[in-house]
Length: 95
Image (cartoon, rainbow, N blue to C red; front, side):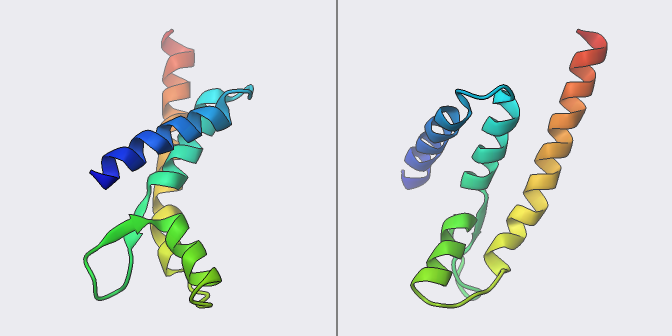
C-alpha cells in the first residue's frame, strides 16, 4: 500500500515540476525516475526504499557518506534517457 501511494505522489510531484517547462516529457521522466528508483536500505536487509531518500537520510542523520544508495540511479538514469532519446528519434522520423 505504501508503494502505491508513493508512486501516485511521485507522479503528481513530477507533473508539477515539469508543468511549466518547455521540455515537459524529459523533465517529467527524469524527475519520476529519480523519485522512484529503489535501493536496499541496508546491505543485509531485503527492504527497499527510494534511493535518493536513503542517500539523504544517510548523510543527514547517520553522517555516513556512501554512494551505495545512488548506484541504482547510476543505472536507471542513463537507461531512461537513452529510451527517451530513442522515442524522440522514432517520433521525429515516423510521425
